[in-house]
Amino acid sequence: MSGSERTRPVPRRTFVLGTAAAAGSAALAGPLAAPASAAAFGWSDDGSNYVVDTGAALVFKVSKTTGDLTSLVYRGTEYQGYGGMNSHIESGLGSSTVTIAQSGSTILVSVTHGTLKHYYAARSGENNVYLWTHKADASVSATRYIVRVKAGLFLNDQPDSYTYTTSTIEASDVFAKSDGQTRSKHYSGLRVIDYSHIGWTNGGVGLWIVRSNHEKASGGPFYRSLLRHQSADGGGLYEILYYGQNQTEEQRFGLQGPYVIAFTDGGAPSSALFPGTLTTPWADSLGISGYVAASGRGRVAGVGITGRDTAHPYTVGLANAAAQYWGAARPSDGWFSIAGVLPGTYTLTVHKSELAVFSTQVTVTAGGTTTLNSIAIPSSNDPANASAIWRINDWTGTPSGFKNADLMTYAHPSDVRAAAWTGNVVIGSGSETSAFPCYLWKDVNSGLLVYFRLTAAQAAAAHVLRIGVTTAYANGRPQVVVNDTWTSAVPAPPTQPGTRSLTNGSYRGNNHTFTYSVPASAWLTDTGQYNVLKINVVSGSGTTSYLSAGTSIDAIDLLD
Image (cartoon, rainbow, N blue to C red):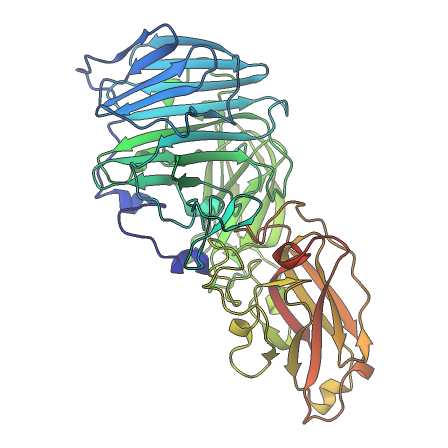
C-alpha cells in the first residue's frame, strides 16, 4: 500500500478493506457449495417483483419492470432503501425486460435494457447475490452498480460519509464538519489493487460488495474512485467500472463480473469470494451474455524481474482495448502469475510502485500459459538511476512522501489536518521531501522556492532539471525560474484527465516528466550562496483556490 493507506485511521466497528488472511478468522458469508437441505430455496412472483429466497437468511426482490433490486432482507431486517430509491445500475435503467429461471441450485434473474444486460444470481444456502453487467456500447453513460442501504444501520462518521452542514465546500459533494475535517463520498483512500471488498459491519451484521476482477473496467490497478458513502438519508455501496472521473483510458465494453453483495454475521466476507479466488463453474451454462468460462481463458507467468529497486513493490499489468489484469511481482525475485486472462495480445507493463519502467507485448491463448523468461528492466528506464546533484523524493509515480500526501486520498486540501501548503525548501536540510507540498496550484502555492548550493565545478556547467508529475488539473504545469535571471519556456501540457482529481482524493493520472535545460550562466558562481529555484504553475484554465490549475508532484532532481 502507499503511505496514505498505511497511515489512514479506521474507526472501531467499521471495515473498509479486507484480505484473504484477515478473513480467515472472521464470520463468513456462507458456503459456496449448495447444501442438500435448503428447503426454502426458490422464487415466487408477488405481482411487481420476483422474490428470491436463498434458503439461508437472505430474501431479495427484483422489480419485474425495471430490474431494480427493491428489497434486501437479511434475518428479517430490510437493508435496501436510500431516500426512497432502489439499488440498481446507474441511477436506474427504467423500463426493462426482466425474466427469471431456476436451474438446480441456482436462480438467475436477467434484465435487458436496450443493449445493456444485467444479471442477479442466487445459490441455494448462500447469503450472497452474484451480479454481472454486460455493457455493449456507450448508450448507458457509465458502468456502476449502487446498493442503497437504509439509514441508521451502520456507523456514519467516515472520510467517505456525507456530513450535512451548511459547509458545502466544493461541487455539492465535499463537506466540512464543524471541527474542520472534510468528508466526501469520493474519499475512499483506496486504489483498486488495495481492496477486495468494501462495506460496513455493526458487529452483528456485515454488508459488503466484493468487487469483480475489473477486467472490463478502465484505469488499471491504481485507479481510485468512490466506493461507498453514508449520510442522514442512508448509505451506498458501489461497484464502479467506468465513472468518467479522472479516467486515463477509454471505456471498455463486454461482460463484467461477478461482483457480489454479501451478508455476514459481522466479519469479513469469505475469502473464497475475492477476485482471483472466486470460481463460478455453476454459471458456465446459464447463458449469460459474453460469459467466458475458465476453460476459455489463459495465464501469463514470469520467472522473475531483474533491475528492480527492492525498496518498492512492483506490479505487472496487462491491458488492451478489451480487457485489463494485474498481479504483484514477488519481492524476492520478481516472479509473477496472472490467471483468468481472456485470449488476445496485451501490453505488459512493469510498474515500480506506480511508475511504468518496462513494457512489452504478450499473447494469451485459451487454456494455455504464456511463460516469460526473466524480464530485465534497463537501468535507464528508471529515472531514479540517473546521477543527480540533488533529488527530492524517489521516483515512484506517486506523491507519497511529500507534505500532505498521506492525507489527500481521503480529505480535501482545505482540511484542518493539512499542513500549510506554502513554505520554502532547502536542499541539505534533511527535510526536503516532507517540506515540499505534494500538490501545487496556480492560486494557492505557485512560486515555491527551492534553495541549494553548487560547487564551483557544478556551477560552471549546464544541467538538466527534471520535475515528474502524476496528474494535472486544468492543464496546470510547472514553469521554472532560476535566480531570477533565467526563465524556462512554458512547457506544453501533457495529456491528463479533464475532471477533478486533486480535490476528490486522486493523484492518479498520466505520469509525465518535464525537463528543463538550464544553462551554466543561470547559476551563481559564489559557492557560499544559495541558488534559488522558483516553481510556478502556469495555465489559462481553472478557476480559483484549490480548483485553480494544479499538478501533483512525483519527484524533482537536478542532474549531474
